[in-house]
Image 1 (cartoon, rainbow, N blue to C red):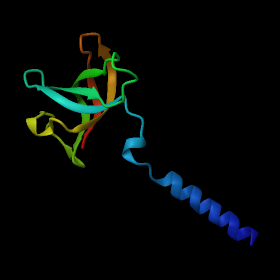
Image 2: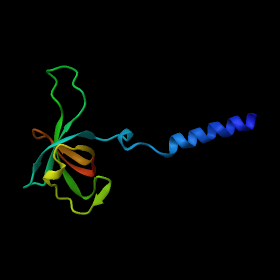
Image 3: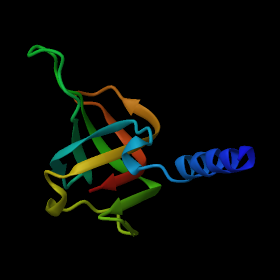
Image 4: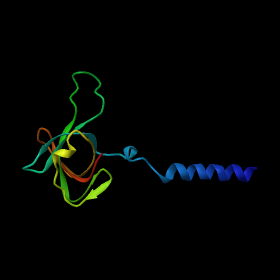
Length: 116
């Protein structure tokens, strides 16, 4: 009986650690793509966190792809990092590579970008 209990606990632990939903992985910014700058090949991502009150401004950031970055749209990795209007209004999960430029809104490069 004791051996079966340990085996059951080990199996639960392995199952819990083996897969992690994409959304639970810590991103640098997660939000909605609200604009595309074709000239600079950037997307504007506005975070989708709930505001504490009406005066709190939502965080926005212009995101470009790093030349070695990974762009995943609808589960497929794309080699062409050109943004098109089909991704407007969709959810984006961004991992930042390096610095954030202090413009308004800030600008950065993504080492990984997932568009759902």
